[in-house]
Length: 322
Image 1 (cartoon, rainbow, N blue to C red):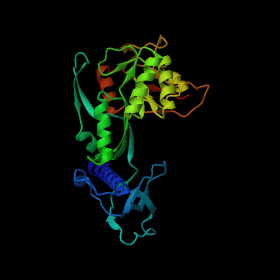
Image 2: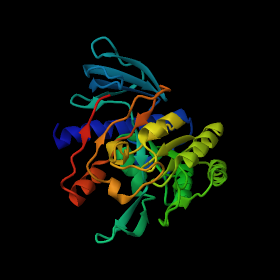
Image 3: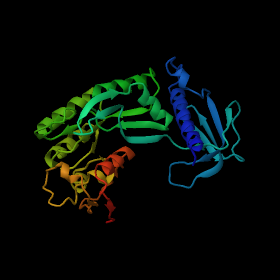
Image 4: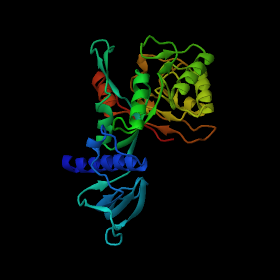
């Protein structure tokens, strides 16, 4: 697909998703949001589109999708699905319609990193650009996978929810949780009670996810998963001291970075220990759990993979099926 074709796919997904959200709320579109709304009608018929429905089925050509408020009222071939009376009809030949994308590892800030030491030298909030960029790329739900600026992200979510700014549906994770660490962005926890107290605090502040980081041990992770689930929160992790299999057995909801952080087969791996040396060539897989359960693994962004390859060109990941 060329760049113009990609633009056609993404722009339509984002604009339809924002319009449907605003109409579903049955209110006047706020002045701050109005410039970004391209479709404002009680009913819209998207005709002659290619449809990707998100179920895994093959794309369907020459389809009509009728949206009324926040409800998809009808889907079918354009020949057999006439637009309803009074609907705004859009001939979108050459466009593709798909459900809004759900991002499960998102950040609303970026960092400047010292090339020699790897230390973060500056954090820049993206209060204005991040919500718009997500919509522009068709992301209508975004989970912030740990935050260096948790109040910034909680307040950003509230602004979007209130209609003060356009943006996706944000799901906010609180501050990063880990074991002993010198990273100034992380909340180091020494005991299970410490973990529970931190999770309670962020749950009451409005977070709906918790993210654990590299130095988290199995005891800390278990305490966090149990506390978060009891409060209706979900748990994700950029883990290294705990392996993927161990985390799955403890009930984690989402593992981050695909194979990059799976310490399953690090030579000489010590339980509950982690070091930078683990970021070296591995053969990664998950063993079969004695307690089968559904678990999701989020792949790394292209930027993370490129950073790893640039830092050590010898890295070659091998995926082994179990």
